[in-house]
Length: 77
Length: 160
Image (cartoon, rainbow over all chains, first blue to last red; front, side):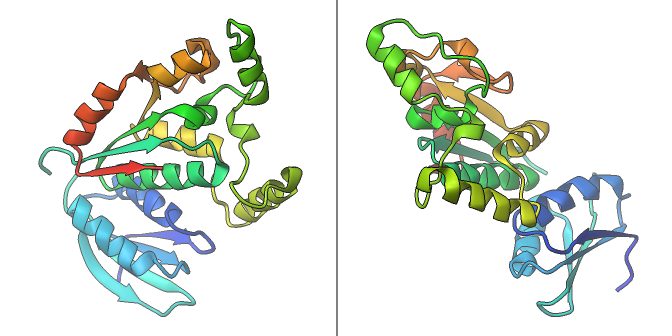
């Protein structure tokens, strides 16, 4: 999937990838896509829940547990 | 988004592990757009005491208590395997390996994200802890009614 920006969260555990995502998303423009690369096993469900709570769009997951790529579309400021 | 959902957390324990759990949930809640308030009471007050200087309390019993129960983020112990500091030190090492923030870093992050830190007035009174014993990040000293007022409006309320 194509992304406008990437956030490297390899080696980091919950909740740091989520907190970094919340910080990073502020730098994106509305409509842009953020790719988060992580190896924390919880990141798929966590990011989905985070998107539901913050009303950003969860676009999906690529890769497996070794290196997961999750995609989030910024839908509002 | 509509009005922010609230998360209120009672931080009763002064154990390092529980303090970490509390800050993890507080910062995650804030990152999810929640309005977060943490109420520190009883042993939990140790988490937000300054690391340096003494606790200037009045009366022998309170002086003894605050000498033995000095507190401060750097003095917190794990609830298990403290082993005179060896176990706690090892756990801090493991956390550093995965770049997990320390309590001090969590406090700074939480404040940056708008989390409010509140100390319980009754515990401060009973234990003889003056207001200047707390770090500057603490927002105010409040009572049980204020907490319940917040908890009533909160979507999530936790006791740690």
